Length: 95
Image (cartoon, rainbow, N blue to C red; front, side, top):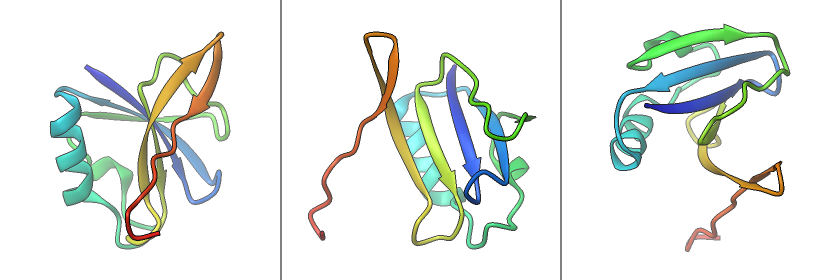
C-alpha cells in the first residue's frame, strides 16, 4: 500500500490517497488520471482518498502530489532524511 499526500490547488484542500499497487503502477495511474482542471474531483483516483485538514500533511507518505492543471500537476517521491521530509526533484530532459 502506497500513501500519497495530495495538495489540491495551492493548499485549498489536502488529501491522503492510499493506493494498492507498486511504484510503476502508481506512475501509470497518475498519468492516466491527472486532472485537466483543479476542479476535477480527487475522489476519481482508484483506492482510498480521504480529505485531511488543509495544510496538514499526513505522516508516512511515500509520495507528494500536486493537483492543479494537466500541465503542472506532479507526483514526486518523498525522501526522508534525518527525520525531515525532503522532496526529491528529478531533472527533466526538456528543461
